[in-house]
Each structure stands twice: as C-alpha cells, then as structure tokens.
Amino acid sequence: MKFAVFASGFGSNLQAIIDAVKNGEISAELALVFSNSRKAHALKRAEEAGIPTLCLEAKDYLTPQSYDRDIVIYLKEHDIDFVVLAGYMKLLTPFFVKEFPDKVINIHPSLLPSFKGIEGIKDAFTYGAKVTGVTVHFVDDKMDHGPIIMQEALDVKEGEPLESLEARIHAIEHKMYPRAIQLFVKGKLKIQGRKVLVLEK
Ligand code: GRF
Image (cartoon, rainbow, N blue to C red):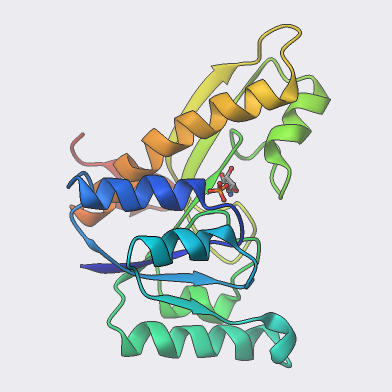
C-alpha cells in the first residue's frame, strides 16, 4: 500500500509518521509528501528522509476544484492508495473526497466536535476547557467532521501555560497517529455511518 502525507507547516506529525514507517510500526510505503506551501518545513523533512515531494500553490489555480483535480491526477498516476492529512491547512473539495472515498484521514488537536478549526488547542485553552485532547478521523467534505477513528483526552492542568498544553497534545498526536494509520493499513477500520468499528486492536 502506498500513501501520501499532506502538510502545510512544521511537520512534526509527518516526522512521527516517517519514523514509524522506518521502524515498521506503519507497514505501508510513504510515497509522497504534498504541500500547498513552499515554505512548509515539512517539505524539508521529507527531502531529508528521501521521500518524493510535490508542492502546488493555490494562487496558481482559478478554482479550488481545479487545484484538487491536479493533485488527484498526480496521486492516481503514482498509485497512491490513501492520504493522511498532517497539519494540512486547506479544506479538501468534495471532488477530492469523492475520488478518495473513506481513504483520507486527519488528525485534529481537540476532542471533536468541540473546537474545530485551525486553532483547536488555543481555542480550548482560552475557553477554559478542563479536558481537551486529540481526534483522528476520516475526512468528509466538511471541516473536522468525518467519522471518528480514535480519541484521547487529557486534563488541562490548573495554571498551565498554553505552550505546555500544546507540547503535551503534540506528544499524544505523535504516538496516536501512527497507531491509527496502521489500523487503517491493516484493514481494521470499518465505517458504519458516523461510527468506526475497530476490528482488532
Ligand atoms: C497538529 O496539531 C495537527 O493536529 C493539526 O495541525 C498541527 C500540525 O502540526 N491538524 P505539525 O505540522 O504536524 O507539527
């Protein structure tokens, strides 16, 4: 099985995935790292790991769909079976999601459906949530919305600075995402409506 990781920024989740592929925790080939931003540090991480990269910028396209169409063509030409979003700061079009049905996974740094959007950690922190966490889910055409694969909660400590909460959430992400990806690779995730059955842990 071949997969692509889509990342727009720092790429710490990408790094956890690269490491997990290397040590056999994920038994699929990471065949492409795609970014919508040339500045993404994720692209450097991919290059250092010898993984092919592709970067397309939305400003070079007339519509979101024409942008996604080019990505889909590339993915199909390269026999990519599934896609992992890791800090990809762009909403996939319904066109893309239809081309890869139930084959796109995302990670979000809150307990969905709370605190959707790009500032999940900060929003929960500012809101005064006592518990927050991490969600891995299948992607549909609404933001941070598809069926939930896995969640982990953590307590927000009293007086804890935002940076500390961020670090603890990222540490959870880096363990959780490879585990969820491997369940997908092994065919252990069965979608039933909004629910995802995990056939075997
Ligand atoms: C992560 O917190 C992820 O959950 C969210 O965006 C962040 C990306 O961080 N979707 P990184 O680029 O993987 O370091």
